[in-house]
Length: 181
Image (tube, rainbow, N blue to C red):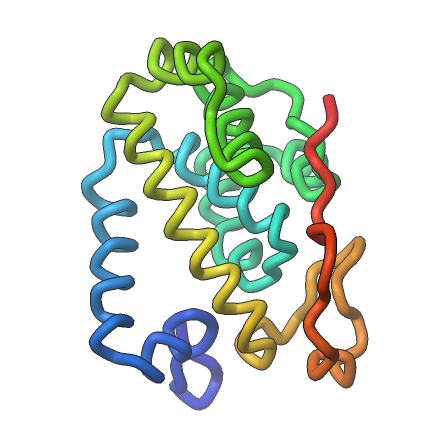
């Protein structure tokens, strides 16, 4: 993604700071987007769950159009942004969102959640979901570490004043609350 002057923005600009690693990161992203067995709906709802968790406006803005193209409604996306599991998801989509939430908050899946995810997504699908979660979490953390690349701040809990983007790092509990149903 580029700005109006043609300069790379978001995580792509950060990747240029350490291009050897940035190339590998982008290769993983390409594989997740183009060689995954996950449906576009599962990929996008999982990605936006991660963007919501990390309050990553760049990730949200980059993936919201794809989620709408995949058939998600504005109402469903608004629910997700408010840390709620959206209404109207199919069982696989719901399992993906629940798995991502567990991975982000507990850093693992309990046995019933693992069994449900494998039953609905397949073992390969779950593995790809885990890698997707790690990839977009990594991008969100990078965007939060380099706030100029995440310039439009996340609504409902994010920084709204650009002057605050140079704030001291937050210490303590995550800025994100668990998703409630």
